[in-house]
Image (tube, rainbow, N blue to C red; front, side, top):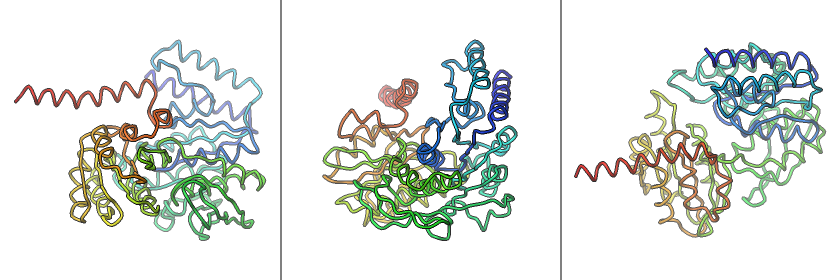
Amino acid sequence: MFKYYVQKKLERYVKKYFRRHPEVKLVVVTGSVGKTGTKAAIAEVLAQQYRVRMSLRNLNTEIGAPMSILGIDMPDSLRSMGAWRRVFRIARQRLRAQTDVDIVVQELGADKPGDIAAFMKYLKPDIAVVAAVTPEHMEFFKNIEAVAEEEITAANAAKVAVINREDVDGEHFAQYLSNPNIYTYGDTDAAEYSFEVQDFDVAGGYKGAFLTPNGRIPVEGIHVVGQHNLRPISAAVAVGALLEVPVDKMVAGVTKVRPVPGRMDILRGLEGATIIDDSYNSSPAAATAALATLYSIQAPARIAVLGDMAELGDISAEEHKKLGELCDPALLSWVVTVGPQSKQYLAPVAKAKGCQVASFDNALQAGAFVHKVLEPGAFVLFKGSQSGVYLEEAVKVILHSTEEVNDLVRQTPEWVHIKTEFFDSFESEVDAGDDKY
């Protein structure tokens, strides 16, 4: 009841905020994957012309989203009524004060059916971006049609919808779209907004041109890795165009975009290796795209460290096997798996295809193994889900410098405590086994 009380009170403050500040635009980002990167790219482009409020934290829940929209920090204690009274006092001040932003860019999460509809009861987006419709939280959604219906709810509620043509099957899910004001972005000129690649290298980034309804926009130095990471930037250009950001400022914005920590971030490794740190989370679509990116890079050796993909429900075994099928022995020196699902389903398939495979129970063990087999100049991909995997801890083992630990995800004291207890549990299991025998 206490959480419900706080949630409803925050929602009322958000409604009042937009009612009292009608000049403030709201851009929301939904989708199975890619929300944070898309949100960050949009905010960077818009910030070249407007005052933008956007949090890089994953404040996309029923409590986190209104807090982020209002620009208020989460209290240290979520159960303290005194702390929430201070939050409500700041919210009232936001209502009375002259606004300090022109645009709010907010991601919205969906863990179960009805979550996006609940947001739309108090939010009226000017623009809704749907980043992807792929398997997520399948223990609750059960099928991909339910995921599609959920994510597209925001598109229907917005004045304008911007939809990822590559990761949202328009033909299959058109039945859920009722908003006639739709633009698409993607990899080809079949979408209204796309990026035509002319050249790429890891250090210099992408060179090419955005293809838009208003013509080509040449750009050099887009510092992301992977075709799938160009899509969020195309989304940012689409939103920028809709909100009348001048072309020169959009170009400046896209060249400032950098990977969000743990999401295809490029880091220096030992032995002159290059790390592709995609350790924040994993899903079938994201893991497939990450592997494709690793394969596309010329390197003397490539290692794929693949952790369990969580929240897949009944399709988990099938999806892990599919990822194993994508492991190519001609392109990978090693496939390293972390977690029981990957060990049981992914590893045997990769082995059957001829890959060298090593499986481990946790990320620390995997990191130590990668350190041992690391070849000079290798590229190493780390891709795994959050809970029970924490591949950022494997990344630490082969980082070139301890100073770059700050570039990894989940390094706050709260997360360090959670992970310490998690990895200590493996030591306890070993100790128990020693006692037993």
